[in-house]
Image (cartoon, rainbow, N blue to C red):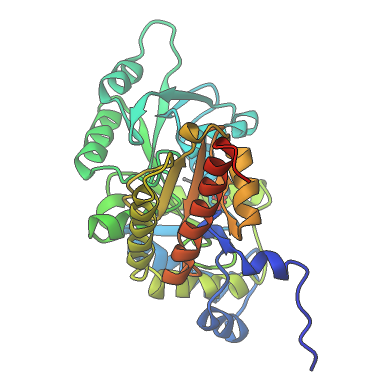
Length: 361
Ligand SMILES: *Cc1c(COP(=O)(O)O)cnc(C)c1O
């Protein structure tokens, strides 16, 4: 049989640090998908989806969970299930649910209110004032946290912060949702089981298709009653899937076998950051707590769009994170040699910039 290179063959030869979402299913996932027992998840239920939902609930220490196509949908259902229209959702102002998902307000009728934070952790003083409300202010029905925190550079919320937020929410009658798209990265970084983090929230979402490498899917976990409500709402937004066991089979491998290796991604992110800072040039790399490194390019005199294009030319793919920063995410397809290649690409672009500045060819 002829080996036909795929259309993106060249781009797949590059080191791809754009996101951990680029991870492909593992051979074990593909094998489980082929032999998965199937049903109709919109009728009697799909047994493989059922097994994933039970496994994820148990891992997260919740009564039940619901398989959904994406973590965005898991977060949307958490809002729909817990916040009535014209009430508000309070969250840290750089949270993914705020910066990237608050268009959901057009569906939910819930107002999203951002609270300033440090390292992804809300200022609890401002949170308390907000929740106390009063006068003619909107009632806060829901508080959301995020860990690890994407825009804060993969930072992990301290557990005592999570407890304080959860206590405050309870005190003012608000429910708590945790956007745990990368919850397993946070658990590995804190060296605790995921349930130790999830216990500080009523509902928790978890993305199966980031570092955990499943091709698609996420779960929303909580009490049996809440998950039953979310199941009805999932049908309303078109998230009910039929022989979904084909992909849930990969999700089962994701939660059973893919968590422990995330520590490798974190170690490589630390190596990448240290090597970039050791170049001694104008690049400033963040010190990662998990698998995300942000690289500040401000002092290079070029913006993130320039750097993304120049690095791509040097065989490295990263994403712009604002005008002056890049985001690099380590994952299963990044080995030690990839980190060396990434550092070499940054070095090559930085050197060409300093030669240009010195008027040398
Ligand atoms: C990626 C991400 C999401 C959305 O996940 P999808 O599965 O891509 O919809 C939500 N929250 C955070 C923090 C994320 O990083």
